[in-house]
Image (cartoon, rainbow, N blue to C red; front, side, top):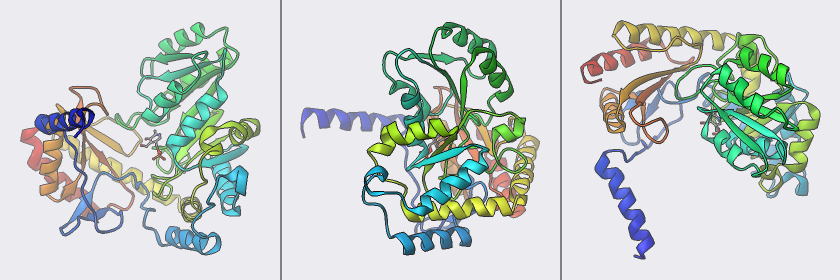
Length: 391
Ligand SMILES: Cc1ncc(COP(=O)(O)O)c(C=O)c1O
């Protein structure tokens, strides 16, 4: 082995020594309220973003198969070179309508969508202002901007700190405030009314990544703008969670901004389009969500049931309209150990530690789906009860 590979090996060994080396379960069945472990048991699934149970919905699968039959496996090139399949345009139309936006464009992931948006919109003399707890893709998107962009970070959901940043950016040509709609590790919502008000005063654009809000938050699942009854300029989101669960991301907003993305954004200019099967599946996922809004209401009932049950057991869980319930346990190794203990009780739940969350704030994160039954949630609560003395 070269010295470099030996050094990398010792980094990996250190993770093992610290008990923070992550192993992922191998599954032998589709994502649902339960999942089958390869060669093993069916366990209650508390760690998927399959919030509406659409990852294995028959209409979604049929939509994926139909698109694949019609368009084959993919474009085999980028869109501006070889063209766009009409299933992409159909999907982008439904996304734009869903987000109450003029236009939308898609990417192979929301990671790519965020990395497309920020550096394409913010150039020399502009300012990007980002919540400190934003998703890693937004953090990296800001890092990708030219050094001539003023990059400012405000304290999590702190409107006076956001006002300070906007003041510092007063001379910028464009000002873009970007935030998660739902913060995925905390399960809390951005203060969109506060952000929109400050943006109005400072002539800034607001972009919201509603990856964990679409299908979950708002009366009909249209996300944080629907929940708060406010209008934002740009919405990004994923098709890899509630909206079909496969992959894909999008940007929705005013037509000139979407056209700029198509013309300039590097993840679209230099990378293939969504595979047709993924686009067709996501299109059907939107149709199911729009025609069955009761899925969103049922999800909220399930979240309330699990949260109340956890509180009765003495766990502290944030009151929030999201489907994410974090349970803080402290050290990373402890979170991983507790997750393994939950699996022994027949419940799949993820332990998150450093560097995904701050050191000392490791947690188990429970995620609820509209297709969980009371039996599934009761089984999970029983496992949490058995774990209580160790937390
Ligand atoms: C807020 C947020 N944005 C973006 C992403 C990335 O989404 P994708 O899997 O589509 O790249 C995630 C996924 O974890 C997320 O939680």
